[in-house]
Length: 181
Image (cartoon, rainbow, N blue to C red):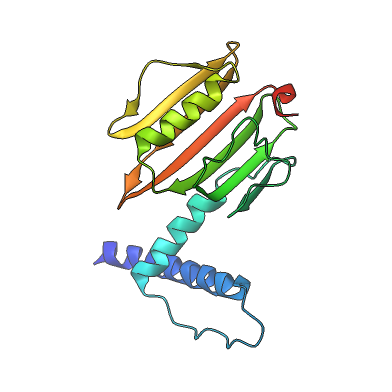
């Protein structure tokens, strides 16, 4: 009986913390002009605990560097599209770029109906034309993946999982700031 009495205050504290997080998140949700406010619902103990756990994991992650820019659905301003061109027929899902650090970093996420092998072949040709050398290996598990190196310090990685006939590719580059001018 004493153990249950000890755990009950802890559960109530988690429930209260979860409710506060849900209320704060609801207050921060953007609404379209003229739309009605969403109805408030009381969190269940399990949803409050999940919310508290998710919030703790989210707040523990580092924030983006001051020179980093990112966008969804387009290439971010200043994106080095000569270094990482968008494959013809592909849709940009997201992009980011930071040339204020050394190495400069660029990332591109896109989707296409092309097979993963075709995506890897396109980017292999584009990167090798810029002096990158392919590193041996073509997969990580069952996912098409390829690494490239230039000058011993510049790297690019592409990974292309496919689901339901759609290949979603992620490309990350770490290159000298001069490479992205």
